[in-house]
Length: 527
Image (tube, rainbow, N blue to C red; front, side, top):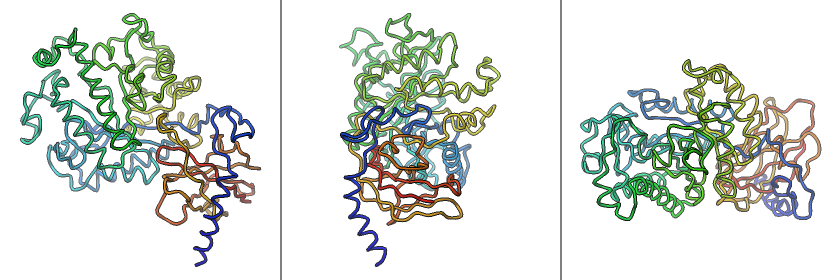
C-alpha cells in the first residue's frame, strides 16, 4: 500500500513535470518557448550518435564462429559479442540473419542457414533471430537485421542446397557467376519473393532496422558475363540499355521494400551500406573526386544517390574503407561528398569503417598507425551530417590491433550516446518519468523512477555537478547512462562513476523506440 500511495503521488506529479521541464533543444535553439538559448552541443560529445559493429555470419566470419556449435555455445558467443559492444560504448549491432538465401529464423519460405549447423536445413534447436533481438534489447542495443537480397550460395554446387530450396524448385531464377549462385534480379517472381522472404522477419520480430550491405548485382569478374540477357529481352523493352534496366530492377527492390516496411511497421528503419563510390567525377561531374575501379551506379547497378534523394531509405552507410590521404579514394574527400548528398534530406549518414585493414601487412603506412581510425572520427566532427559509424567487423573490433579501438573509445566514446532519430520519425517524445528514490550505495548512486508513458522504450540519465538548468539535458557531456525500459514498477540505474563527497543533481528522460526524448524529470540532488 505504501508503494501504491507513493506511485500515485508520483504519477500525479508527472503532469506538473511535463509543464515545468524543458524538452531537449537542438543546437542554438531555445530550450523552451521564450526560454534561454542553449549553447551549441560540443561535437566531441554528441548526445545522439550511432556506434555499431557488423556481426557477420556468412562463412562464419563472426557468429557463429564455426559450424557444429551447440545452441548454448552459439548463444554464449553472441552474448559475448554484445557484452563487448556495450563495454566499448557501442549502442547498436548489425547482425547478418539472411546471408545466402537461407535464414536464422524458422522461415516458411527458406531453409535454416548452413552457417548455423554446417548443413543447410538443419534446425539449430532454438530461434537465433528471436534470441539475438531479445539479448540486444536487454542491453539497450539497437538491433539491425542484416539481409542479403540475391546471393544464394558461396559456390555453384546446386546439390548443396536442400531439395526444397526455392533455387532448386525454380532453377530458372538462378544465375551462376564468379563462383557463386545468384537470383536473377530482373525476374518479377524473384523481386516479389525477395521482399516476401525479408518481410517475414520484419513482421514477426521486433527488429529496429533492416539493413543491406553492398551486394546487389555482383561485383564484376573479368572475363565473365552475368547471363540475364534472356530476362532483359523479355522484360526490358521500355529501357534503352541493359544497364538502365538493371538499375531499375534494384530501384524497384529498394522502393518496394521501403513501402512494405513503412506500411507494416513504420518505426522500423531501412538502411543500406554500399561501396562508397557512387560515380567518379571523371565519369560524371556530380560524382566524387575519386578514381575508383568500381562505381556502384555503373558496375553494381545500385543508384545509391537516388535512393537518398527519393528518401526510400532512412540511413546510408558508405563503406569508406580507405585512409585519409589515399590518392584513389581519399576518406577526407568522400565523407564531405556524402555529406552533401544527404544534406536537406531525411536520410541519416553513417560511415562504414575498415577495421580489417588496421595492421594488415598488405596495407600502407596509414593503416599501421594505431590512431588512423580515431582520426577518421575526429574528421567526421567537422561534418554535422555524419551521425555515427559502423565497424567491420566484430572479430576485428575484438582483435583491437595496435590498440586502435581502445584509442577510439578513449578519444570518442567517453560518454554514452543515444542512436539518432530517423528524420521521418521525429515526433514529440513520451511524458517524462518521475524520480522516486535516490541515494548512495556501495556501488555508486542509485536512482529509481517511475515511467509515466507506455511509449517509453528506454531512459537516459543525466548528471550535473551543481544546479540543473533547462539546457542540462541538451549537453551530451551530462549523459551518464541509458537503460532499456523493463516491466518493473520502478526502473533503476546505478551511476558507478559518481565521486564520493561530490554533490550531484540528476534527471531522467524517457525515449520512445525511435529515440524521441521526453522533457527531463524534476531533478533530484544527491550528496
